[in-house]
Amino acid sequence: MPAVARPQTDDGETLIRINIPGPQALPFLPIDLIPLLNFDREMGGRLVVRYKTSGVHAIEDVLAGNADFAALGFSTLPVLAARGKDVVAISPLSGRTPPLGVIVRKDLANAIRGLRDMKGRTIATSTGSINSRTYLQMAALVVLRAHGVAGHQVRWLAAGQNWDSLSGALISKAADAVFCEEPFTSRLVRNGLGVLLTDLTDPRVAARIPGLGHVRTAVATTRAMAHRHPEKVELFVRMLRRSLVWVQSSPPELVAEKAGAGTAEERQERADLLRKMPGIYNADGRFSEPQIAATDIFLRAAAPDMKLAAAVSLIDDRWAGSRR
Image (tube, rainbow, N blue to C red):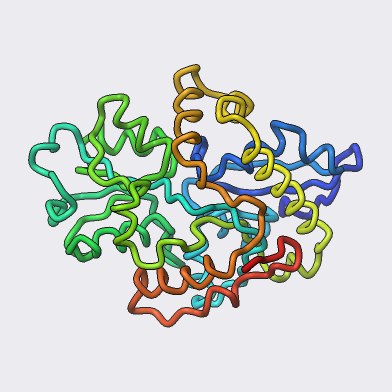
């Protein structure tokens, strides 16, 4: 029986299941915090967070009827829609700061000094399925092209959006570099596995990316699910907004502490990253018209060979709202 078939817990709470990449992927921290801070219980719900190796796998599990929502890179939704998949974004998650970077294997640091040196090399990143590339792979393609490297000029190695997969790609020397999100970029460097080649949190680097202000991550579901259970969508959006606002108004050390699992060193790492990137998350849980417009620019750069639907056509903002 699909997981979404059971609408309530034994305590009468509304049961919501969401898939996210991870664990410990910083862009999805506000979702992790919802059950940790009991924001779900306070609103009469219970949120169950499940981890997948990529956002594409997260949403495919929703399409299979095994979860209510998925958090993923928004840019995969138009690609999935072009394949006839029933997908729609119901809330944004990301803000203005892209927590992305390229880490080159430490023993290759002298040979690979810039992205142009990646030609003929192997880069590990989260990859998708037959239905779609992941957002990270699309972003990696855009970053490489901005530095004169075409997608076919590198070899791609599939890696999950988690520490074991990314560190393993460098330790085993299966990959020459990885393209990933925080906290994994910083952690790979701190653990001596690689050196930072490109940091998209640097405005000078990010400025070369078309559609820089695009919607990076969002929460999505199917239109059918939103039609059948609008009250569940409304409840989740309220939970997420509560978490986003709490993160914005709380000291980074407190956010890192409440995030739970991990060593003291990892908690400090998380606090430092949140301080470095105050704009990593959406401030109020609403869609932004400039972000949506920038998303179309990014999509044209990421998938120039595809005719994709406009970003706005894959957004249902009845619950989250939007701003100019």
